[in-house]
Image (cartoon, rainbow, N blue to C red):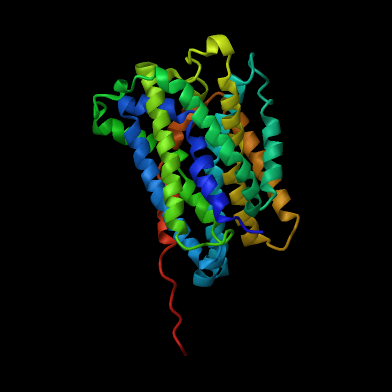
Length: 357
């Protein structure tokens, strides 16, 4: 059963934005100060273009592997798709670390054991063993949950925000803009995810434009969140990690009603889990199609192996998030534009014409 267009639009408009709310706001505040909206907007616009290209590619009704096999042969297709799967697994690493730190710092009163996050990978392996087509019904549930969670947090916080803190525009200069745009480029790979889904949903007329608008709507919500976040904390925003858990606690009704904002925080955190796992799941689905499409045991075995490797990697860099972010925004920064921007654009190259004998 393929994904429906509705489910894909739900993902683009409501589920995809939640992956940008954990550490990215404070990171952008450190890199671009009050101009944090502009590097985020640039990345969102570039990814919107990549999503549009990936949806146009989906008009062919082929998966990425099937298209490459037809154009370039089986061997090249297998290699290219496996490399693309490796990129998706790499892209999942920082979100996984973010989730680990979020769980340790927000959902526990005292610092838990470093192995407390391990059950997440058991759940992730279960999801990864399922094909991407199985995500649709999950997005039907996650989309309204994520939308209500983000809307609730923003409604509680907007009254206390001073949006004048974003002025004067351009104070960080071109250097701050460039640092911010490159520093958070690793959080924007939605075009690659949509390309991995190609052939797994039925393209309908106008779907590319509708998907583009849905993604831009979700991006607008992210930008409004960033503006509210900086409007609340100003120059100390750089120290306010896990910003979505903090901006609503200044609501005046909290003193009477208690931390009602936790209902919205839990809703967002729940949606984040599935978005964090999605790159791992997409990579497993692509590798299964390329390497062993008829072997029912291949996907579960690969899912377990990938998540075991991810668990080892996360534990190996325990409390080294700053160093990891420096690596992803430094030596590895070129990887994300190549795979999440260039590859979706190149997928639109015309098919090779076959000459009659």
